Length: 255
Image 1: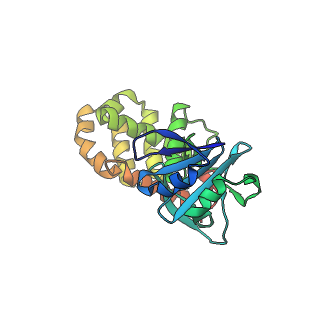
Image 2: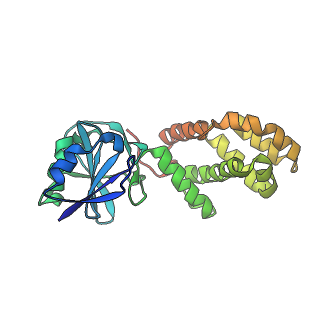
Image 3: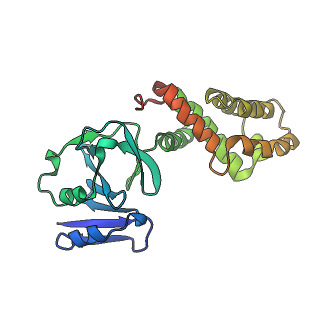
């Protein structure tokens, strides 16, 4: 049996490592390279730093964390260069990862189901709740934001679509291609997130009757209100709103 090593911050792509060479390769792996060791398509060991690792398993269509302590709460980590959290009980001594990669009976270990809101992106999981919701909202926007979607995600899908248009083509273009109803939905979404000044700005556009000069004038204010370069103000509002109304996003209480 072999193990694959992939590094997100170093050249070389994916490497196949024999069990005989695995101890040396595992010891030499630098956390700065963001390495992940994979055994088959089901078991992954992520190196957090020189002392710690995180192990996850895919089984029966869902993901599980290896949790081997009574530690409570969450620990912030990065996987695939994406910030997120894992249960503190699932942060393991780095040496434990090598044990698991070579274990004969992996299913018998102490696995804990990953929360349903975590998004599976194939090679990695989106484990930060805001990144996961943003990702799902983007998919929902492409699907037309059906009314059956959770209210928080539905609101965010309108705002994600609006914001993507502004960042790609400008506020005047968004004003040109969006219907008054779509603009109103984006304003309502901003209000739901508690971004009242942003909701007011979008509302002014919706009521302007395609006033492109107004759109051009309001562009600097839009950027300031959304938090460039990555819409940090919107993301912070999503984090607050998920904590206040987890049911509106179809997630359990975040502890």
